Image 1 (cartoon, protein in one colour):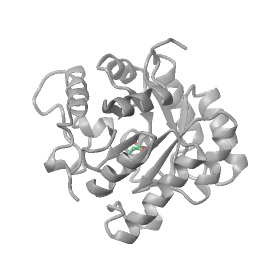
Image 2 (cartoon, protein in one colour):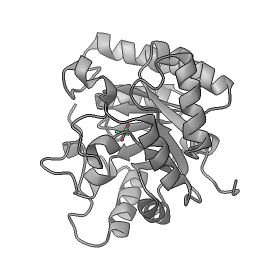
Image 3 (cartoon, helix red, strand yellow):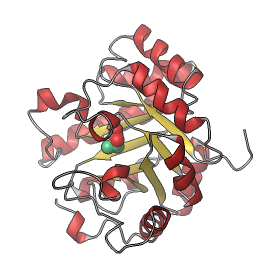
Image 4 (cartoon, protein in one colour):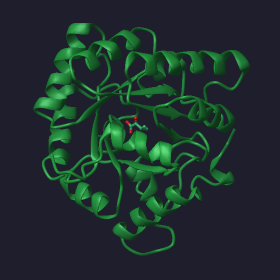
Length: 267
Ligand code: KIV
């Protein structure tokens, strides 16, 4: 491992130093080189690839084979960033499946961390995976893999009871050994409070700008998403210039706290 490779520990140091973490989704070698060249800290091989690459309306059809393939495409050329691979729908529905999925994503896919959605059984799974040496990124708030249960892509934790559940789940996942937490579509006040309370870095998406870092779906921030992109996102290509310049502008805006601005903060 090169000495300057980003790790869970180096991200925790960034949090302690008050340096914001820039994360983007990445699904292939070409974009991996561009994103690392522009200074992105974390490359998330997200199961959002089911929507942005494969054209599905949800992430549910994404398989473990798809995730292993795209993780390998990224990790093969990655030199510096932390590569995190999403565990797809149902791939962690039992301890055995979770261990087998992490084995493939890290062994064949070359990821250095795996991400799983939710709490409940995912707390035990997080403890199991970390016990066997697989670092875990947790994911709370809007859980895209549960869209059919949620009935749509909606903000979560908007009332006191919902916020209390997310807080309790976040603490449980940290205690279980999670190295990072992605908070998706929750009110900015809740995300700010959790970023202050948790020791692990909190990476927000649609969660205001007082998180320890930000993540966006690459195709949203490059203006490649058909129709209307999510209102919490920003098209960094809209001022012209190259893809590299757009990604560098995103990294600079995350580091300075300029992104997300008030216009991207809905609750
Ligand atoms: O799959 C994905 O891209 C994600 C981000 C939205 C955080 O999980």
